[in-house]
Image (tube, rainbow, N blue to C red; front, top):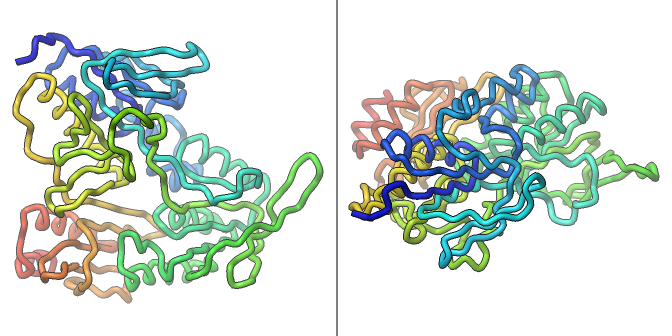
Length: 414
C-alpha cells in the first residue's frame, strides 16, 4: 500500500466525465483532496439538450444543471472554474493553470484525471466570417438562439451528424426554413451505414428540410456593412449558392489536448491510454478526450457520447484510486458503445458498432419503427439500431454486452 494517506487529486475538466470521476472517488470513501478545474465559469451542466430542448427555449439553464451544480459543496472539492489548464509537468507532478481571476498558478497532484473533452471543429479559413455558429457550450446555444431570433431564416446547417441533425430538426420544428448540407453521401456515416443514414435524410425531407448530400462547402457570400458583416449565402462545391442568414457548423469535434504538448503523454486523436484508462502512472483519462484500448473490439477508440462520459468518468476515478494505493488494476473498461439522437418524433438509438451486413429483425424501416442487427466480417453480432423502439434498443445493448449469439439476439428483438 502507498504511504499517501490523503492523496492530492486534480481533475482537469469540469463537465460530465470529470464530475463523475469526482463522485466515484467520494463514493469509494476516499478523503483525497480534489481540485476540479474547468474552463467555463458555469457550474457543470448537461450538454445533449443544447441542440434540442435548450436551443428550442423549452428548457431553462437551471434544468441543464448536473446534480453537483445544485449543491456544489456536496462533492467536497476545490472548484476552479473559469480556469484554463495550460501545461502539465509529470516530473514535478504539477498542472499549470491560468485564469482571469487568479492569473497563473501551479497545482500539485499525486493523481490526475484528464477529462478536458473536445471542442467543435470549425471550417478552415472562416475565422473572420460572422454568423457562423457551433453548438458545444451553453454560451454557443445562447448565441445561436439569439442570432436566429434577431435575423430569422433561412438557416444553413453544415454537417448531418448528431448535432447537425438535431439543430436542423429543432429549427425546422419551429417553422424556420432549413438547408442541411453534408459532404458524405448520407447522414451519420460515422455511426450508421449509408442505407440507415438515408432513412434519416428522408425523415428530414419529409419535414421540409432541403437536404444536400455529397457536396462540400466552398465559401460564403457576405454582405459587408463596413463596421460589420453578415452571411447571406453558402457556396457549395457543385456551384450552387444556398441562401442563409444564419449558418450552423456541425462537422465533428477536436479533443482538447493542446495543453498537454511536451508533457510526455502520447497524444493521438485524444490522450492515449491502456485498456484501464491509465495514460501514465497516476494519470487516467475519461470522456471525449480519452483514446483508450477497447478490450471488446481489440482497437483503440474515442467515444463522444453521454453514457461513455458517465461510465468512463466513474471508472477512471476508481482506477486512479487503485493505482495510487498500489492495488491491482480493475477489469478493463470495455462497454458496448451507446448512441442516441432525438430528431422530430424519431428516437434513434444505436448500441455497439456498425458492420458490413445487417438485417431487420423487428418492424419496418418504411414505417419508422424498427430494429436492425449488424454483423461483423465474421458474421458475429456487433451492433443494434433501433428507431422508435427504445425497449428493443435496451435489450439489444444488453444482449451485445452479454455476448449473445445471432440467434439469441434475433429471438430477443423479434
